[in-house]
Length: 488
RNA sequence: CGGGGCGUGGCGCAGCUCGGUAGCGCGCCUGCUUUGGGAGCAGGAGGCCCCCGGUUCGAAUCCGGGCGCCCCGACCA
Image 1 (tube, helix red, strand yellow):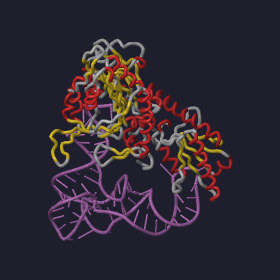
Image 2 (cartoon, helix red, strand yellow):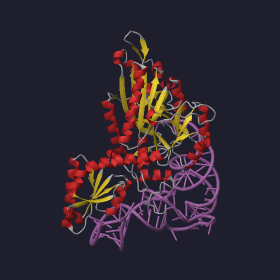
Image 3 (cartoon, chains in turn red, green):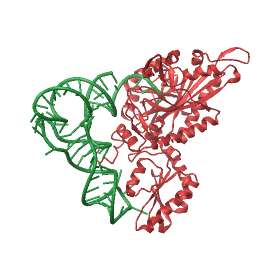
Image 4 (cartoon, helix red, strand yellow):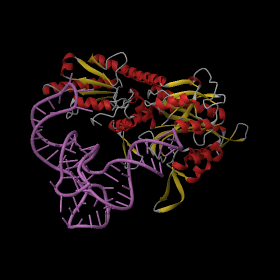
């Protein structure tokens, strides 16, 4: 970097920008263990806000939280065939404990389906015990070869929901409910628009019958899988003997779902809204929504008055449930503070100096300039404090609108030619909509030739309207529209 | 797992080719002056130079071996 205070611009090297901005916004730092990270208070605060919003939604839809253990017997993982094949390569295994080798190795959970359904089998006897609707907030471990802060680390935080139902229909309804809930959350809180739909066979969760996902488009035009919801059918209930007696008195296997979102969403937020000055945290997620920077000048009396007024404004904002902080550090110049808070993505800054005090005004600066106005405004104290709750919401909406526009500008519908798809993916990237016959060989070829995968078979709302006629892969007829992209 | 890079005060680096005094910028501490977009001056603290072995009177530097981390490609929320 020419100036080490500045970030590598996104356009120059997006990956380098991402690493720098995550470190310098103090979201996270590398830990002594390869591929794992420390989530620092600023990053964890954002995650906590995500958790609170999601947790409320889970509770509102009848789910309860519980906690299942970190360690899982190896033979549990091995029970479901597809499941073990999917996870075996990335398992971390405990072989020794208490100074001795264990008779049976224990796996550090890569996900908890096996132990959860083992326990459900114990708790469920009758259809009257169903549905079981549980969620847990936990850490999991997948020994990744290649890691990136938030996007892929050996250990990460997430929530995993696990449900059991009397019927296939009811379980399917649950997966859809959660998928919709995820989508609504990502749009309204992260201001990150997502496509939702079905995963292809090759991309689905190991052990699921069907997987649905939320796919977002990052600023470098690569896709990020931001959340998944799985219909597990009876795959696990059969392996773990999760049976119930039906109304008719027959023994039946329960129908399961599982679904999760992780700290990866923090990475999604960074790559959706960040700019060359730093990250941009949507107001609803921001641990600090408004930072007040007092500008001290002109003697002690004035300084006292400025600090007093800053605290008074902070009090008024707090009363309106705005998360506000007064930056009283006196060893930093105002300019240094401006840069720091912009790097950390605080939505609004209030500057309060002697001139402002005299004029009963304040300088309000939005992290990103609004489309129809200046980034900086001079407002009366009263006006500034009363309008801020609404301004935060406006900014939130604008971030979403910007992200939707960017995604649409980088979505290419009705592509019918293989070479054209490759050209798009090689040069600019983005979401490419084509027809597909359903033949996995086409996916394989795309992966090899253009490093792209089918991100999702879009739900009705995201489809182009006119059904594609031919499969992008060549001669066959199209059976469905699909969305291709290079992915994280 | 393959390819590349890097390990030197808290951070970013120079020094290594050609062995001999460990250096620069930022940060940190103290004091004074400052504060409207990364403050100035003065003084100061802080280093098993990744580890182990070898060569040498002498190793951050040369040789051998290890370890670690980051980045780029095949699997994954």
